[in-house]
Amino acid sequence: MTELPVRTNPEDAPGGKRTDEAESACSAPNAVDRRHAIKIMALAAATPGLASCTVDGGNGSEGGGDPVTDGGDVVADTPNPASNPKARGDAWDPDLIDPVIPWDLELEDDELASLAVLCDLILPADERSPSASSLGAHDFINEWVSAPYEGNGDDLVLVRGGLRWLDRESTRRFGDPSRPGSGPRFRDLPIERRTAICDDICYAETAPPGFEFAARFFDRVRFLASTAFWTTPEGMDDLQYVGNVPIPTWDPPPDEVLRHIGLLP
Image (tube, rainbow, N blue to C red):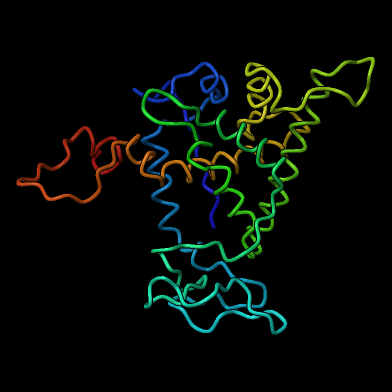
């Protein structure tokens, strides 16, 4: 799947999550607001790369087919019968009425606890919506990185390594110099110290030398947490997204809107 960085900038988002933590964590230049973020997400949804994901040795064919096998064992399959009799319930014909995760989840409880703290640093609760972790963003990321696809496996390495980097960086910055190797973990730091670390890895373009891996990690978690958050009913309500509804009349977008999205000069 094409990587499209999603960045929230509460300062530019009227009514958005304006907390000191989020403002600081996303205060780097070139950040975009929520409306821009959802546009990027729509582009990502339309990217054909998602449909081309393959399982090791499989064809990942669209529209179903026999479950992909690896060495004779069925991969990414789920027990039948599905709750929907018309669905096979496997990864290529999922049972959307009663969805299941057809693979083992890789992240440990300790890793999930740290990931939840980071997700809430990116998308904290505000007056309009709950926090990312309360909507299960960290669980979504666990499902994503555990999927048996090559790209998802790369994300597992990135997320797992990034969480460890956060703890090492916390120890380096805020540990006791007289006790090398000892120090607080990232998730136990005061919020301003957590934010200080994330400010340095918010954007790859501005990350200090040696922080490139951490910047890629943060960017990936931000993308996945945003995807998880804004695809929930609470997240859509936060965006004021109403979907397709019948209306008696239709007024086209004003020129300033068309100009803003590049459809008018």
